[in-house]
Image (tube, rainbow, N blue to C red):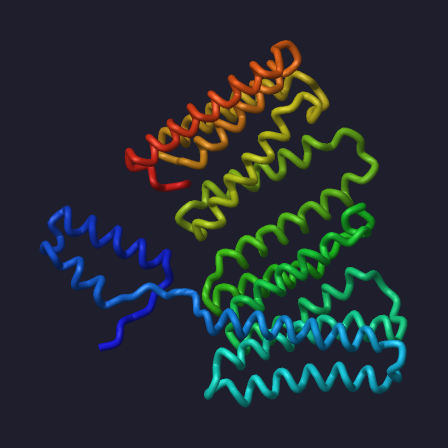
Length: 355
């Protein structure tokens, strides 16, 4: 009977749980080895790696050749060449899918690269108006259907990264506009990620996209309002706390992200300069430290990390100006070592839950 192949993280979880069940008497001694024998760890495929790297190199080589001879090729020939390459990659991949699935997938990835490069080259060729960043928007949109048809997590992740790059457009960052159409991407990425098979990387990318969209709304709405850092901080702080409180109702990766969000926002709000009234930062910091202690008491390891960062931030703020620099670094190093020892002890005591 063939063994079932599972990911490294799943293999480690299986071994840990089997050991626990055997120690508690639920499983008979020796049963763990028997069950583990039904599985094997899924290792990185050397063939797959070669094919993927090869497809990328071929794509770069072909595009470099085309780019170097771009000025000597007629517009119609250029356009047909791009379309032909894109169709050839996907058609060949489709024909080879049953016989050589790994090779077929590498050809699909090559098609994705050709499609994106084609958008930039066609835009340059016909002198289309618009911002440079718009190309990433259309590239992301164009490969979404392919991700759905192929049920491919990597293409979906690529689409989410491309739309994140689009969100760095100057008009969005400067608060001149709010890209409301990004709501479509957020919804479709969430849907496809759930249907294809949840990828934590895509989940994080989509969450970052949501945060970037909220930032664009705030930038547009608060344009012209001075000293608005605390508004950003408070809104993201509430979002982070909301994700943490939804533990058990949303995926763990989103809860972990919630800790990073409210931790980062709290660090911003712990500075006096972030508030319109100076003393508020101290009240906020004290209340937040109490909240972290409450979470630590519940067994949250991430709260220990954030608490250490908060303490270290105040330590540097209040000692850097009047203590010798060498002493500041020595004491700071000792603090970090102490935090590390405490964190490790909590983890060994059974506090393996990050959140």
